[in-house]
Each structure stands twice: as structure tokens, then as C-alpha cells.
Amino acid sequence: MREEKQNKKISRRTLLGGVVAAAVVPVSTSFAKYIQIGLPVDDPTKKIGPGPGKLGKRSPFEQPFKKPSDISSRTPLQDLYSTITPSDLHFERHHAGIPNIDPQKYEMLIHGMVNRPMKFTLADLKRFPSVTRTCFLECAGNFRTGSENMTPQDILGLTSQSEWTGVMLSTIFREVGVEPKATWFLAEGSDAAVMTRSVPLSKGWDDAMIVYAQNGEAIRPEQGYPARLLLPGWEGNMNIKWLRRIEISDEPYMTREETSKYTYPVKDKIRMFSFEMDARSIITFPSFPQKVERGWIEIRGLAWTGRGRVVKVEVSTDAGRTWNDAQLQEPVLSKAHTYFRYLWQWNGLATEILSRAVDETGYTQPSLKQLADARGTASGGYHMNPVTAWQIRTDGSVLFKPENWKS
Image (cartoon, rainbow, N blue to C red; front, side, top):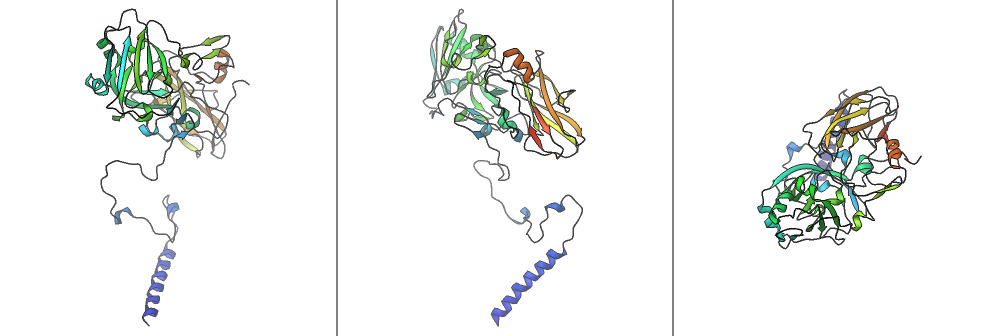
């Protein structure tokens, strides 16, 4: 009898639940499509959540990630909401993996054409006046094409931006007393590849830094912990990570990375020491695999240049036939990613959308054809900065428009 009453109670609850579910009627609001009849609504106000923790983390509903390969991993540009890249999403490019360096044992030697050769510990570097600046880093080989199903991350994901903190290299130069006839310096890393690059001394006196912090925390190991060289606006491989030695000289050292690598043919010549990253831009919304609806759309993206500030970004919504100025999001910083926006009313017809950047030197981001005409078609993959296009189809789907510059 008791078992029978219990069954009746369960049956009654089930029945009442069914009545409540059946009582739900369709409504014509945007919220209605999220209501699933018969399923409980998760109400966070009815459950105590976890308390404060030692380390913050992302919502489980937000899962951005870098796309790794054997030697690099790419920043998800399409998932970012500002010009700052979270430290754990900063792109990576390694030549022999990430070394594990004890900061208590870290030393950086500076010698060569100096009056006082010296070694600096991490604590020594931190005792100098510190400077913080925001700028981008970009791999010299940051451009891929070949498929319609490519995201901004796939195409240009080897660029990221951080707020960097450290000491000006010019401060260190003054400390050791650089000889007047010196014109170059060699920067050497602590990785297994012993990555080395020759750098004009003028860059060291200008805005080069030795940085030990990134976005308000110690620099990440994959970004050069405990200290790296930062050359704002210059190709990424010159920004030596895990910096252990600087040698001052009166000529470049002609290392492997500036002879057999990071050089490329320009018609009948070979281009070496191509320092600054050229102006470029990319639309991050709309982009693959997003979809759009007919009506007003805010086109958004990033633009940057290694030669100073971006002064203008132009957007075309008719496959490059006409161009209009986009709005630049302040602050527009030198040698930094700049956010741009352009409001567009899509009529539902198939088209292509493009962007191109103009920097303060007057340089305008070229088309792929202009690059091919200027450099020839055997230039390889370094310093490729062509205008890129997204195809908007009538169903609202967005696809990358790959081009073959040899065609």
C-alpha cells in the first residue's frame, strides 16, 4: 500500500510537470527560441557558485585557442575584442623549442666594442628605470593562402600585440660605454638553436628594449622568459627571445638567420636585412566561418605598420571598385595594432569586402598584383602583405578569397 502511494506521488509530479510544460505557449520574442520545453532552466541565482580562487580562468563557454604546428602556433585574431592579445594567445615561433631558464641563474653578457664589458642578472635589469609600451610582434613569414575555408588566424595569425615592460637598450649602452665607431650589435638567445641576429646599433639607441614583463605579468616562457629583446616594428625573428648575449661591432655578423634564412629574391637581386614590417590590415568580422544577415553590418578589423602609425584604413564592399574610409579606434599608437570599423548595409547580393592600410610615411598596402610586379613571382613567403578579400555569398556565408600571385 505504501509503495502504491509513493508511485502515485511520483506519477503526480510527472503529470504536473507535463501540465506545466504543456502550458508553455509560443511567444514572438527573440528569447523564445532559447526556451526548450520539458527541460529545466539553469538559474544561477538558485545555486551558490565557487568562491575566490588563486588564479582566474575563462568561462567554460569561451575557449579560444592557438593553432599549433611543429614550429609555430597562431593567434585567433577573429576572437579578439581589442588590440591587446592575451598573453596565453600570443603567437609562438620557435627554432628549437622553449628552454627552461631559472631566473635566479639568468645572466646577460654585453661585450665587444664597449668600454666596460658587463654581465647583468635579471635583478640588475629590473633595477634600471623601467619603461612600458604597447606594440605588435609579427613573424616575417606571416601570410598564408590556398583555401576558401581559412580564418584570419590561418591567414595572418603570426602577429600579436602586448604591453611590454623592461629597460631601454640605450640605458644599457650608456652603462657599458659603447665605442663611437660601433655600428651593429649581435643578439644571441639561449635556446637550443642559439638564435642570433645582427641589428643596426641605431635601432638600439632608438626604441629597442630588453623586456621582462608582458601584459602586467612576468613574460611567458614561450615569449622569452626571463628576458627578451624587443625591436618595435621590426620582423619577429630579430626580437631575440631568452636573450643571453649582446656583442657590439662595426659590421653585421652575417649569421645563418640573415643569410640562408630571412632573405629572398627580388627579381634579379637578393634582399637582406628587411627590418620593418610593412603596413597591412585584415578584416576579422565578417570572416570565415561566420555568417551574416541582410541589413546593417559593422565591418571590423586590425591594421598595423612597422614604420609608425596607421593614418588611414580604407574598406571596399564592392570587390575593390570603390573605397571608403573606416573609423580608427583610439588610441592609435606607433608600431601597434589599430582597430578599425566601417558600417555597411548589405543588400543580400554576392560581393567581396577588402581593407587596405595607409601609414604615416604615405605607404599604402599593395594588392597581390602590385607585389608581384614589384618583386617578381619567386620572392618566397617573407614580408608578404597583400590586400586580402572575403567573399560574401547570397546565403550570408563568408569565405576567404585565395589568390595565386603567380597566375
